[in-house]
Amino acid sequence: MSRFFAMSLAALVAGSAGGCLEEAGQTCRLDSDCQAGLLCDLDGVCRAYTVVKASYDVVEDVEVTGCDTGGAADTVAADTAGCAAVAGVFEAGSAPCPEAATVRQVTALVIQDHDNGLADLAAVANQVLANGFSEGTITLALHVDGELTTGCPRTVAWIRGADDRNADCTPVFSDAMPLDIPNLVSTKVDGASVVQVDENTLTLRGLVDEQALLDSLDEALRDVADQLVVSDTDTDCDGSPDHASAVIEVHLAPAD
Image (tube, rainbow, N blue to C red; front, side, top):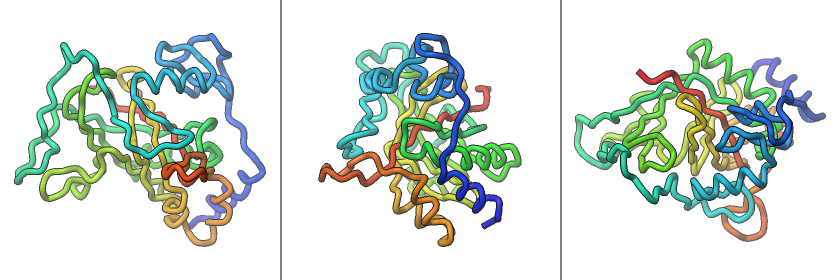
């Protein structure tokens, strides 16, 4: 573990601040376009977290706070007319495995710096993620069976390499996304549902097992990181939060 990461994490315990842009009611493309405490709603307007969350619940039926058993579906479409069919390419079968019609390379992951359990980790993690994608030390692709457009049925797989597809053709990561931050964290985001922001950007919302994340860290940093990851979601409904909510902007390379 480099001295840079140790010093950066320790400094963040005292607090961190992110940049602010648009006020409530103003236009936006990404959550990061809006002032602290606001999110970019599906219609491209900055609104309060509670308002935006309600719109995501309608479209994606996903909860990221309160009692959440993690059983929500990715996308529920009332009318699939015009949507590409799901071909079943990730169902169990024999090699050679069929390929998804759509494969989009991930070019960046940006953890939202407010209103989720990983917000305090974002200031360090986002720079490391940016460097990793730029230098090629992080690779990730989104494979889509069906159609990525919000409202259409789909099955997705998050694939870093050949090992992320099992011998029976099923994906290792489908309702979860691997989150690898070189020299810092290796974990996954469970219940990784996505909403299309524009043709090259998604907003992913899910849950991270805080203990599993801490176990992936260098032992010397666990006490520091424990103060930067907030368990804010109760997945077993016992009244005690046990997972951290995660909101991550996923940037995709342009479609071929």
